[in-house]
Image (cartoon, rainbow, N blue to C red):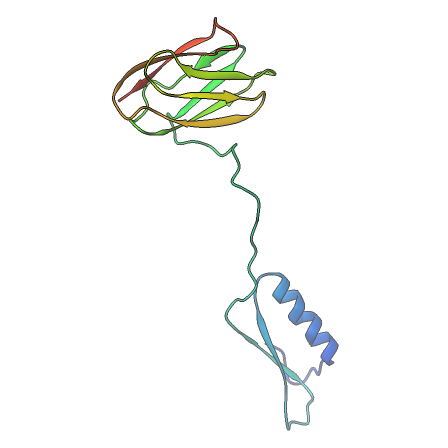
Length: 146
């Protein structure tokens, strides 16, 4: 709260009000009327300045535990099980692109660029779903859906 014994000029009040508004808190600045002190009162108002990001959600966001397949040194590291219909994140730690492509009826096929992540939806039914990297046929794994 500003003291009435410390008069402030209007530009000072406006600068402080602007600084508070930039920090995400809107303020109402009113000049004292009829008083001889020339002071200004600052009162809190409902926030009207919001910070927002127009960036799309990061594809590097962590997935729930057990729902990530990691590719390192041309090898798959798949979780023990994944819930049916769960979103599975694939993190490619290699310097080349790979795929995670169902060998049979799993219905998933995703390409993951070097150093990136991608997601796909696990099959809706329980079972073991073998998969391969179509770029590197020696890379094989199994997605177990529970």
